[in-house]
Image 1: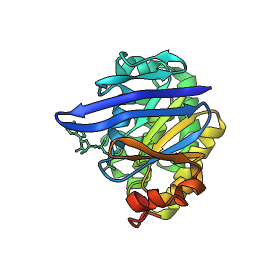
Image 2: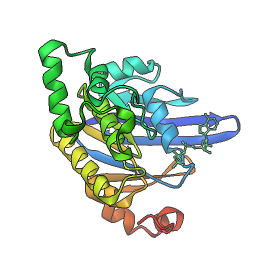
Image 3: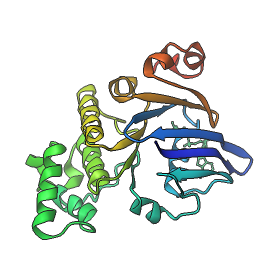
Length: 238
Ligand SMILES: Nc1ncnc2c1ncn2[C@@H]1O[C@H](COP(=O)(O)OP(=O)(O)OP(=O)(O)O)[C@@H](O)[C@H]1O
């Protein structure tokens, strides 16, 4: 069953047609990567899914329900969660306090502490839990924010360039985290430019170009597609 369905999504900013009749189906349980040149409309598509932008036309269905007119918080209540590109952690608070803020709506007392411990282990941040978040390395901040996004166990996790600025080793560890979340049942849609990450995790790949779905398939099909190479993969991304 499709967990997320985008049907004919159009979004204009003034005269700029940023998403152009985008159809996309995300199967429940898959890891799907969204790739494409800068300005292709990937982040805009995320903001449409999350309800931060509203489409000029088209529909968004989540678990069969039409959520196109719902506000962001109502979409989050239904099981959507997002980690945007720029880490949005509370820099002056500790790692543990950041996770407390993310989880306190659903967990309390001993259970809250146990959930935070579980997340700290998952994020490899146990030793840094009392560290001020602003002092973490760039990669650790990204992980903390992934933790804040997955703490409430969303059904669908949207990740906007989760490995931007990471070393190859950190990128690989991030891929392992995403795979573990997926094994536990989370569906993931990730925007990525790092093809090592895409190769590591993607079960299917969609290429967006000039606001349109340009190609879709397995990573092997996508890297073998000469049309994709011409518009994107030829540009030193592979
Ligand atoms: N709020 C906005 N107002 C006007 N134009 C916008 C707005 N947001 C995005 N755009 C434009 O829409 C186009 C698509 O931008 P978007 O950020 O969705 O692309 P992207 O594929 O995520 O790019 P990147 O890989 O660089 O992050 C760009 O030309 C951008 O300048």
